Amino acid sequence: MPALSTAAASASKAPAARPRRHRPATGPVPDFDVVIIGAGSAGLSAALVLGRCLRRVLVCDGGAPRNAPSPAVQGFLTRDGTKPAQLLELGLHELERYTTVEVRTTRVTAIVRHGKQFELTAEGETGRSRTFTTRKILLATGVEDELPPLEGMREFWGSGVLHCPYCHGWEVRDQPLAVYGQGKTVTGLALLVSRWSRDVVVCTDGPGNLTANARRRLRLQGIQVREEPITRLQASADSGLELVFETGQLLARRAVFLHAHQHQRTNLAEQTGCRLTSKGAVWVDKNNQTSQPGIYAAGDTTPGTQQAILAAAQGAQAAICLNEQLTREECPK
Picture 1: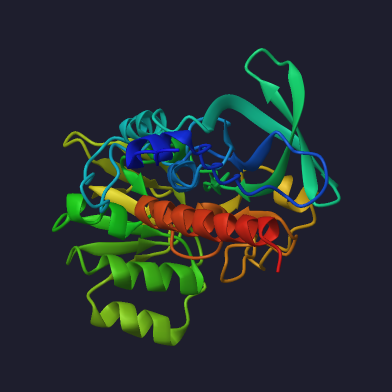
Picture 2: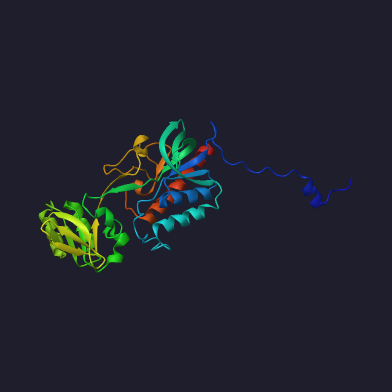
């Protein structure tokens, strides 16, 4: 019988079986590999990396991010000066090509662990609740700022009242600035802000609780301290603002910096038993995993410096750690 040609021989072979995707060894298959709660810089960055890993991902978008009142995101390489909403729109657009990633406008209200999986309950825009299951969770819900109960603080928040000189210092450089607060916190922030302006005034709104050494350090940098009570902030004629003291005196400033107290935007970390730091941040290890196995966290939710670019980096790092943990579970020794 004549030998088959090379082409014919190749054609006569059965097609090679395609490698099977990694699967958990046992148990029911959940709806998703990872559910990301939060659609800010951290959450969308994590979704991008996990989408590129072919992971089944759900992003739960619970609303506007913390920096929504800010006129722009600063210090974000290639996106310096981009409006916060536009940055997120760009991120969502990039996710469209990754078919394993789904984004829903929904708010997660409850998380229940079932062995190595989780069942989440979420409420949609219509108020209707539904449940779904996942192998892992990434908390990227962020924080909310607690502003002092001073008239005008909320109205100027993000424009004239600012939280971060690294984010906003360049825009108000060489202009008269104020730093609001008391004690050690206001001292450190005022010294930092003095990098951007030689005209900085600390306003403590009553007794400043400043040590003699703190006053000395401020004085050496030419930083004045005003301890009179303040009644309100108001707009000034030159598009800045004015601090109005109880005495009736006005202090015109281009902007006021402060370190606002914060709290977690949701109680999901507390609800699931995740350890919190003394400052209320969600504790994570070097792999961005919380104290609860299978629950990870990234962005402003966790301790550390808060910037959009750092949140995005943490989201990417958490995604890599998540994918590698999932792979270890799918490929047992």
